[in-house]
Image: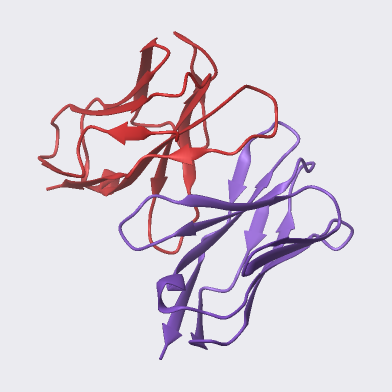
Length: 114
Length: 109
């Protein structure tokens, strides 16, 4: 069974704080993704990574950065949190790059920025 | 631009059949996925279609027509546990998933 875990289920931060969201997968997947999910909108891709130390911008990268120092771990960083970043953040992983493959999701982190 | 459309919400009765439609316009096509997402939980994979036709998997079936840019998810013998959101996603020519906003399915006894 593929397992994708995220460091927190719920997080409350203040405007201007630096926020780290961690994601770990245990299936040796090459691809990892960070999405945000807001009511009435589809999942929106923030960043993705096809390999260690590699990152690509998704559709909404502004205000975010990522880090992938190890294959199993993909971190999302909010350098200075703002209220419009209040959202559900979902991490996902899949087997290989540039092929059609199922994405497996973590349980999500519901972030509230006050 | 790329677009995935699906109804926002549907209601059905326990034991009945429901069909959730999805239409898409994307840059290229490398398959269509359906995911199920219970409230407060992660999306989980249901089905994948890349060729035209119907794929059956137990109570769930998924249909694809590439020429029409159309898919549907058919759920039979509905159970209360099927109450969830159903997400349609298309993989485009760059192998990126384009997601619909999801259809919230409410099952009534």
